[in-house]
Amino acid sequence: MAAAAAILMLSLTACGTITPPQAPAETTTTTTTTAAETTTVPAVTALPDNSSVPETTTKPGIDDEERKRLAANTFIAEFYDSPISFEDMSKPVSEVMKKSGFENEIKSANGVQKITVKGDNGGGVIDVMTVDISACDFTYDQGYIAEAFGAYCYGQTVGSMQGVTEDNFVSNCRMINTVVAKAKYQQYGSIQKSDGTASQFGYAETAAVLVDNKLIVVSGQFLSTDMMERQAFSKLMTSFREKIEF
Image 1 (spheres, one colour):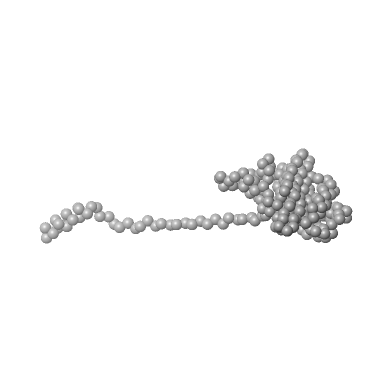
Image 2 (cartoon, rainbow, N blue to C red; image 1 turned 135 degrees about the vertical axis):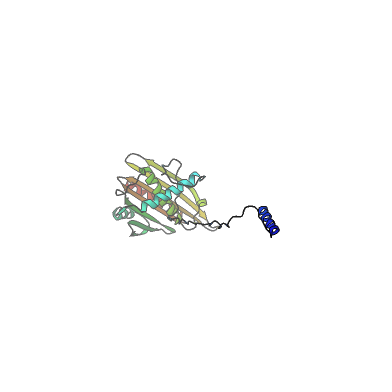
């Protein structure tokens, strides 16, 4: 028995210190899912380099054009979520269209006067609106508001021209003029496209002016197989600018 006890003590010494078994550490995995709220707004044409762009949180490494596009989209979403109101533009619209040689139909929807024009060889549409922003608490300067909203409307107008791409534009001009009491924006482009058998001539223009917290916008597009009809439509857009005193 003494020998057996000696062998047992020798075995315990060789195995080291015996300790109670430790419960395995409990591992807790927590997964946090953050749902990103997405506001969908139509694409906005890129703003000029000298634009007064509001600050926007973006990912590192984003290029300048993308930053401006995101900032403009943010502004448009904020614009339509603000307490804006629309004023009736039926009277000046009717006065301008009485002198037009185009067949036309005028409808009012959501404060916008939508004019459908038709010639012998083509047609188009013009949107006219006055937006009262006096109840809004925008921190943007007047030039940026006119420019961003004007660029948005121009993008929507061009986007409604079926079959038209950037390659079809033979000229494109953008202008912005900001003074203390008034901010003006204008963009227009001439279009020429061919399907191999016939050519189409088009014109798109947006003019926006912000004065006394009233944002007035005229935006239209036209496509025709007759170049002279395109010129007549361009003159019609000029008549709107003169009537509303851009």
